[in-house]
Length: 352
Image (cartoon, rainbow, N blue to C red; front, side, top):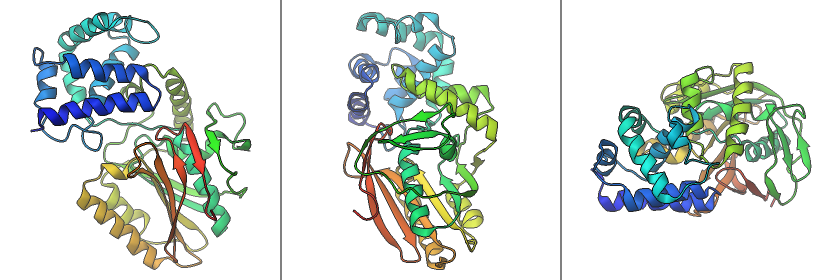
């Protein structure tokens, strides 16, 4: 069972995360939970008796709880709660009063949501990934075969179906309903031609864009005062439905080893990529995954190379590292730093 100190730290991390990533309401929720959540409701009891790691590298308990409340608002299940949620303005006492009422009136729904790991699919990360794919195409000059680990609903499998403005460098379909324009710092990525021959993703618990329940679940984990994210994600959902790229359910490491990387196809570059996903693997699973990719790298040739593009958190809590490794040489470089939600990119490139 998690200690009280661990649970309190999880809410402190929610406060700092909301503050850093531009969501004052999320930070406010964390503060209210930290100061006022008690065992007087079944929901509060479940949180304080949490069995597991409640933190940001574990079960993300504050995110589960915030997502459950946001779902009640988004789905129109609780008009009273909605009246104190953004864009409406309410004091702390009024907000907390409605939250406590929701804990009681929607106890079963909230407890069910607390039992599932959050699913996020921040599509703004696609712009940083695009810069990585352009680098791969420029370096290797071959069509891409894509395998996304921890793909969730697969919205970042459709990165080439969005329009991107990377500091004045325009790429993609200008008519796309998804338009991404991160604060781009540094030079432009290479102007390379990209051909995608095949794309697939895998997740332990993937969400289906064709399912209203799954769509609601995904949207609920977006922060309540960031309506622009909700609008962008809804547009990305329409693209996902149109192209029918569904994520396979299963052990993504076994999927990589047995299905995707079993044979590297000559004349193509196979790209394994992941964004804010690898960190959620237990240490032993991460080691297994590294071994699976390294083994495939040993089989890579100049005619059938392998690339690994990853955007993951490291020791710097303020940003994620965008890194690229290419086989058969095995050379790895950091291409830049990225805001965890993809709001900005500090680009260095392969030759920096």
